[in-house]
Image (tube, rainbow, N blue to C red; front, side):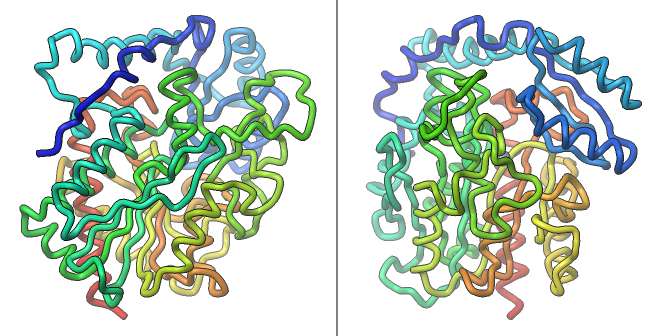
Length: 430
Ligand SMILES: [Zn+2]
């Protein structure tokens, strides 16, 4: 089993300054009408620069992180609009400190507990070692490549797992995770799939490799991911400084582009922001970012693309195209049928429900996202394209992005079961 040789970056960087999220609240609200949904959406995009942990939705609660100075203002505003805001966290920093403590305790035991992707949220350096070790161990079926460099000069790794690395006749599955930096469970769960496909020690992974080549991008946003370990656990976007315009306030947030609003599909439309300080800043133009261009170019230069999965957290959903509009595509019934099968497979692992539907039905429209771009007829043209939102669900008290590491394995097994099911279903259809 591959082991991580060195973790020096972990030991020095697990400190956060207390001013960051002390007494920040996480408020849960439920929209009961389209009017209330629009109120939330306006709030998300106004000058408060509030941090929406989950998108405004009519079918589940929305979680909003609110700084202490705005708690009274925001709760008063929400009450006036008919909401019943509920504080589910009153000091976010305490939770972050607990997560750090859990990470450090495994070191203080003298290394008895090896840091593995199934048991810990690995740093970017550790993930690099993990991927390189797998490549060394299984060179006949694993190939590691960088698709390009980020703004801060980190590689965007793609690991390819194939029964014949030189052949191009098999249909290809793309998996893209860690697009949003704070969604740590997506990287951990994807590394689990990578490991099982590389090891080929069970019937499911043998079947998956017999029918498809797997191209997996476990850390789509390395700069953002590193930044969540070193500076700001709640960072979402990449780390492009967006220098062109002077920033008047909350300047720290004016770095970064939302890499799931930067694709050339209804770019600039509803559900994305032109405000550089916004969590959903779409970039100055479609494909302005290295990370989206690198994946676009890799997909377009690969023959036989068959499926694409964009892995996010949280809310426990499998999102079906189209995400950028309310109208359903002509093949919606096909997409819904296989997504329901995949969701059923996830349920069978641990009894956890993952709802299926379009972003417009379950959340809110999101323009410029990768799932929709991959289906573009004059682009990659991949029919089977989906977005996951992994654990926890929106009703739970499992701390949103700060999902305890004991849930890595259950979540990873659910994700793997769904990939297996998608592969089994789609290998049987044209
Ligand atoms: Zn996300």
